[in-house]
Image (cartoon, rainbow, N blue to C red; front, top):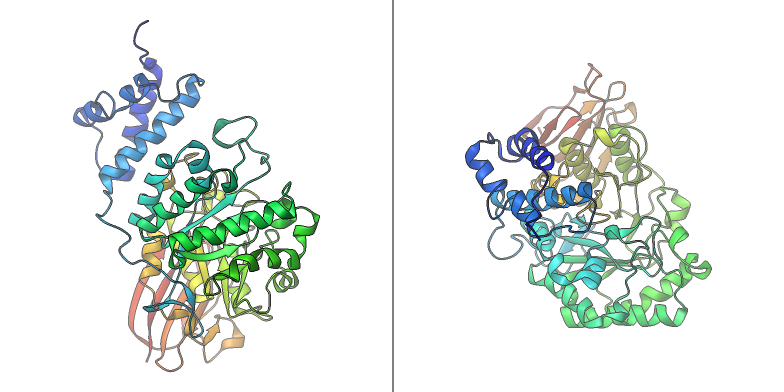
Length: 473
């Protein structure tokens, strides 16, 4: 049998993709003959991937996509080599501080990466498959990851090309489960763990599952766990009794009794900002509310909702946690305006969440199913944690929240105009502030500054707005 070389038309497709998209966009360079010798014909290139059997047995278009994704990852590792060691600024031992999230070093602004099926892929397909994602998350500056540690019922969409979709349960692979959690801890990453669903599990199986989670936390170390969430959007993923907050509280209390220092949430119930739902699923002992935020409207509408849920009465808690907000990528469902979510919008959103006292999770299509698209190619993937790192880490302690409307005349920094807003947080003791000014790019009129400021620095500046830090004069 002869060597299985890729068809010429597919090789040409890859060559054009590298020349027109990847090299100018990722490397800022021209794709020349020297580059082709490496990434088309070389040992790390497309032909080698195809001949080596990547995606063998799949349809040619599927094989092409798999090869492109692996090729992108290899080129990205050259363009952005991982820093040696572990996360440069880890957030370990997350807890409630004085009016903020904190760790042993003081106030912190958590930014996590959504990696929904990462644990599932590691349990079913092997740990080595996901280790590059952990490396990428640490190198890009994310504090940790949100992942579904169990998915007992097959979802509607087939995962990883399987039909029917695979299911995973750490009770079937307890040693491998602990190894996955430890691999992230080795990179100084923290976990937000959520049951992807509880449907089809008996109460006894659920008890055993959460008892295993408590034991895993014992073995890996509680400092590597930021948040334990009972069930992801339980309205659609749980049995009848699971949709009751009391039942979810009973389950997390099996872990909480052994690890009272960790943070816990029950469920986002579904993608809603309804205050009554948030209150019902926020126990009295819980110091933050938890939600999967608004995905409708245009980009500036989505950003406005981040302010509104944290800054306008009635506020459920001072602190919040965005577990599955909007984000780029084809698998982010029930969302309007995918095409508007560029890197600037994603930075504005994360900074707005911090202003409104909410932990942020970078959501994306490959954050639902890894490798469906290149994770590192998602707009704002690297820029988002870098932007939040430039904010004052005690921002959630700033006691004045407001916007550029007339209600805040005399306090506001900029006056809002038409659809352009100017939402802010001010520390009254020092005059320090962070302001997010944003709106539709096509609107010519922009907010007018009303208060004098000094030490001004722009962290984000894009077509949809900007983020500014400074001090009131």
